[in-house]
Image (cartoon, rainbow, N blue to C red; front, side, top):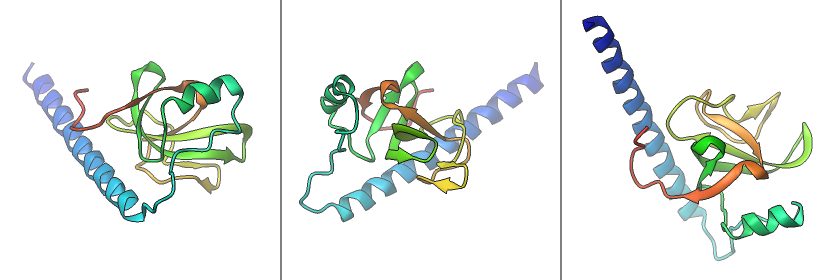
Length: 141
């Protein structure tokens, strides 16, 4: 029993440290976006999407750096939106906030679309983006 408790404690501590690292990266990214922010509108150009999807996502007013909820209730930072080399669909690149549940680090094949820690990044089609979320503290996962 004691060994199991120690492993749980280590696991919890490690998860909290990753959460802090992600929170710090997110805050730095927001600061960089604010510094780079000029007077133009940074909202994503969704015109390449089918009309129904475009109208659904336009209501979210998505921008790079927003926290979004994707399928299965997972939350992540939107880092990329655009064309990719493996499909004709418009793709969203997301860095998961808490757990290493992704499949990559923002690189697919030999092409880097965005950067994040290993196993934190994943690419999605528009139908997987559920809603825009607010990230104001460490996750409760």
